[in-house]
Each structure stands twice: as structure tokens, then as C-alpha cells.
Image (cartoon, rainbow, N blue to C red; front, side):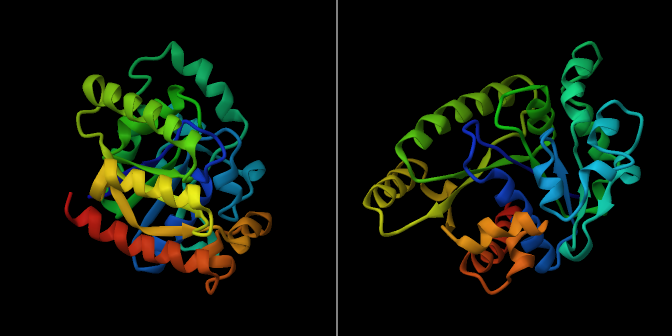
Length: 256
């Protein structure tokens, strides 16, 4: 049975897509069967996995409108080692089209159920806004992985996300919970980041992942080559941290 996780944060620019593609590549590297679902119309996770969003014959848009199955629409991400259910600009139109449809927030969940035995992990890259697309992700998932920078404003965004997850848990998906908080773009030389990190650990305890992803130039460069950092430069500090994080995710998933 596949473990389905959303990578979500209602604050933009916190490294959601970087986290999704590198965790997918890290999990593939440690022997897991992984499907990465891009729910963001910008399609950055698709492009960052080496898949050209402009040449997709079928995308997550077709899956949400039930004109294609996940098995039909998913494509291999070449040297990355995982499968991609990609997104492109068409997906922006799905927001409007879904409003009128039945089971509009549970269409992705139904589609993923059909490939449950084919994967060990399904990772969903959600848009930063709380939309019908994000709701589809949250309704499908067993839990949420929250990447966050250790900054003051990040704590405010976290409060909003926790409230959203509580509402979805109460009304749409009783399985949903926060799996863990991942500290990303971390620079231990900055006192504020250390203070916020300690605050997170004090408040959320073991919900904070042990792995910390450092600020790393190679991770930032990788998307321009259409690859996750883990594949682009396996020896970089950030890449090694994501492989370590993949091991931690496997262990955490076993306890679920």
C-alpha cells in the first residue's frame, strides 16, 4: 500500500518543489517505488524532474477530469528513478471546471487508489494557495510534510497551514495529519534561524524531522538543468541531506 504525502506550505518560496523532487529522487535512490504528482499549474516539479511539461500527451489535468487514469498519464523521469504525473498550464483551467463537478475535492484520491499497489510512496507537490487543487492533494494524503525556513514570518504561515489541516481532517479526510516539519535552506551561522529552530522543536517536538537541509548552491542550480539536486550532484551537502531525509521518511512511514 502506497504512503501518500503532500508537500505543502501556504507561504510561497519556501522550497516545496525543491523538497518534493529531491525527496522523490532520494527515496528512489534508497530503493523505493515513487510517484511524484505535480498539482501546481506552473509545472515546476515536472520540469525539475527532467520532463518537458509542453510535450505531455496526458497530465494530472486529464486525471482530475477523469479522461485518463494515473497509469496512462504517468511518465518515467529518466535518470531520476521515479514516475511523474506532470502538470502544465492546462491545470489552471481545471480549477474552474472542477467547481461544477461531483466529488470535486476527492477526484485525485479516487485516481490514486487504482495504482495503490504500484508504488511505495506518492509525493504531491501542492500550490501555495488553498485551492481546489490543494484540497485534492490534502484529501488524498495520509499526511503532510511541511518544508519551512527558520524565519519569523514562516511561523505565521505555519499557523495558517495547521488550521487548514485541522479543517480538512474534520470535514473531508480523517486520516490527514502533519507527518513532520522539515527545516530547509538552513544556515547555522544565523542566530535567528537557530532560535526559530529551537522554538519549532520546543513546540512540535518529534514532529520536527531530525534531518536539516542546508542552504546549498548546487540544490539551487539543479532545476536549471532539469534535474533534482540529488541526481545533478550527488556529492553536494544538500543532496546528501535529502538522501538522509529519505531514509528518515522510510522509517517514519513504517510507524504509520
